[in-house]
Image 1 (cartoon, rainbow, N blue to C red):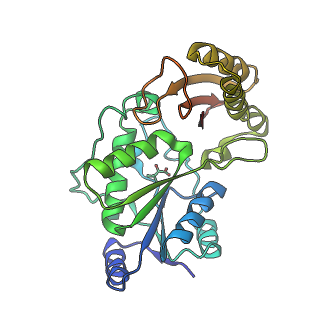
Image 2 (spheres, helix red, strand yellow):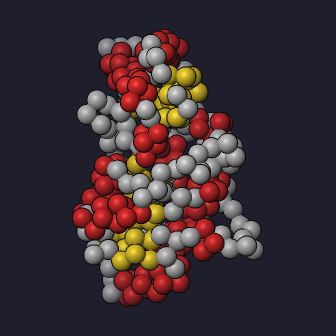
Length: 281
Ligand code: PAF
């Protein structure tokens, strides 16, 4: 059975005893409503560490004013069952007050690479992510931490933060897990109506097509973007494309000519649900 812990002090006490006994700690930070993507991170962590800790905390700091904090899906019982089945040792599930007491004043900001892509449309989002992840890292003191590459920008931002702040943590990015038709797994897929769900496949369809064009020799980002746009907008429930960017995997800056290893990243509203996806060339 996974231990269900809500107190930071209790977590710290347990971590201390794991460390004293020379155990390695693998950490999977999540906002809950676990799906196959999270499960793949947990399985990776299990393989590479003695102890696996999953945090479940819907972090208000990373949601904008008009975003989906209130309706973000939550089901702690189901999450605990999944964690038990996967052999997770501890589920850390603090309250808002536990993480951000009334006199809270400190934030962590990664510059530059947080400004484009999702950062351009979600002001303050990455500040919220890097702040909570720093806090979680300080509490859990993991040897390795696992992040899904669906949130590619988040993964790179966390890697940069860990490097810049000299944290002794290996940040591991795990491949995107997809539904049978290609839709990237996300807790937010739950918002989609059945008609919207059909249109949600447009993101991965367009990305796979773009990769195919690149493999056949197309290297012009404008041509590729136009092709992606055409496919996505052909689906009836797509409300708008927020961005399509073809970026260097490290700098996250747009490229003028596509090369192997570049990332095509996009954000699209299907109905009112904002979905993101990406593919590595
Ligand atoms: O990817 C997420 O679920 C969140 O951004 C994270 C890393 C758990 C921080 O709240």
